[in-house]
Amino acid sequence: MSIAPETGTARRALLLENIHDDAAFALRDAGYEVERMTVALGEDDLIDKLRGVHLLGLRSNTQLTRRVLEQADALVAVGAFCIGTNQSDLQAATERGVAVFNAPFSNTRSVVELALSEIIALTRRLTDKSSDMHAGVWDKSAVGSHEVRGRRLGIVGYGNIGSQLSVVAEALGMSVLFFDTSDKLALGNARRCGTLEELLAEADVVTLHVDGRAGNSGLFGEEQFARMRPGSIFLNLSRGFVVDHLALRRHIESGHLAGAAVDVFPKEPKRPGEEFVSDLRGLRNVILTPHVGGSTEEAQQDIGNFVAGKLRDYAAGGNTSLSVNLPQVSLPRVPGTTRLLLLHTNTPGVLARVNSILADHGLNIEGQVLGTSGALGYVVTDVAALEGDEVVKVLGDLPETVRLWALA
Image (cartoon, rainbow, N blue to C red):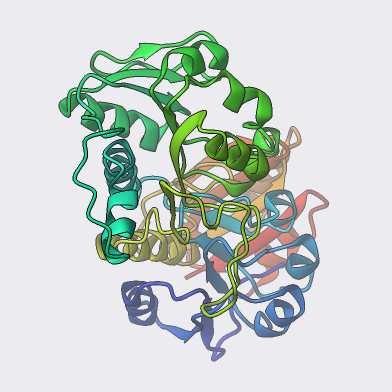
């Protein structure tokens, strides 16, 4: 199956959810017609919009389901212009040979800075002070207000964001402990906890930075809040579905927790102007933000350039470096050759069969690399310039072929 546009057919890209201008500029410079939308799309609207589209850019509110992918025959690659990829059905994308890319590092610093600012604001009870002042109440008191220096920060999830938060928090004089289900190197003076319960019993501030895997659903609920230290503070800047918000509300109202900051929610408005509904509205010393952890101009510009570059490089040369669902393959182009890109089921003998077919057609291999991951294999081959499409047809008819295309 060829995924390259037919000769004379425009290459098209669709960017949703107000993705940064730089992404559109990069794709237009690469020869794509770019359509941009500021909103997320529902399933039916997305199916309609994806007709004839080769590259799709989305963020966290557009759900790329199996049904959508099955009807997106022209789609080559998807860019999640954010950290998470749980909005996309990765299994369905893999089965159809659609590459998915994200931005695992680009907004790390922005999330870290938001977390730190909220930790300081909550520890000093600045939200209450500001609300009182706006209401005309002058309450010059130190009661309940603390420095962060010397306090214990518990980080749940020690990945890119959690580990960088660890370093910056130490620079402010905080003691850092962390819990992660994977083996992670402790940075600075951070101390690893053997269990989540150990961390909750010691930390003055608990902040979640876990990923969007299904196993994290309901990670933090009544039991975990009850184990936290009296007067401690809770933050969630990771995924909305990992926290029981009713349980959090009860522990705030009872005074067990001194405050909380939440940036992500189980159900979020799809577009500006839609009402935000949450069990956490109206609580004192609780900071609610509209999923803006990575929403700084610097982060969005970097994400726009990074993900658009991944989409462009994959469509132009088959480079899958940092793809979240395809085997990792990168091969420098050999001038004057045709590049064959074959995604196939990962079964023994495919590479030998491919090379035998090339030899039968008198084609010398100038460069080749194979990568496999799970049920999928990916071989990139540079051969002397092709005449006609006979080889492509033969390779495309192999029973193991998932997707095949040729690049001049």
